[in-house]
Length: 133
Image 1: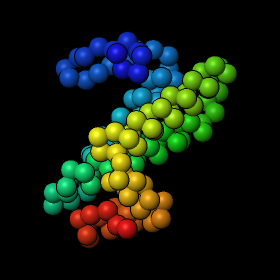
Image 2 (image 1 turned 90 degrees about the horizontal axis):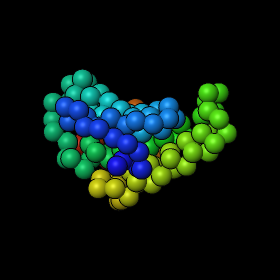
Image 3 (image 1 turned 90 degrees about the vertical axis):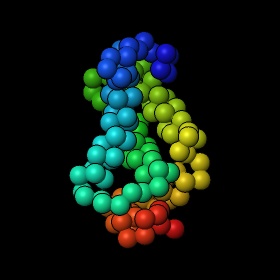
Image 4 (image 1 turned 135 degrees about the horizontal axis):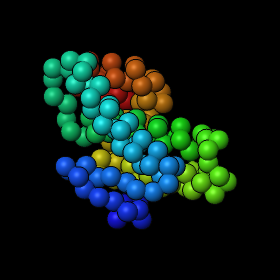
């Protein structure tokens, strides 16, 4: 069970079955994280980042997605769905912030993005190969 939902594994991909707000939030956060990995590769970063640096940046992007969905007022949501969506977003965000790549490195990346913005933080990572102070 993933966050109390029915799931199925197909070709190594976890499918989440449930209401549309659940899918949008859970899959959206996972896609935001994975698309950041893709962005890094597609922009020709020819060096290898420490795993904790790359994962922290990807987690910050997923966290940003969760902030966006928590604040979103989707007109298709019922009042209960909206409350659930906000609660699920907060829970997932907390899981990211305290998860395996969470903690100090995540907070450092989050602070850098808040201070410099995502684009400038990424450029500083290219220059320094680490998350800027």
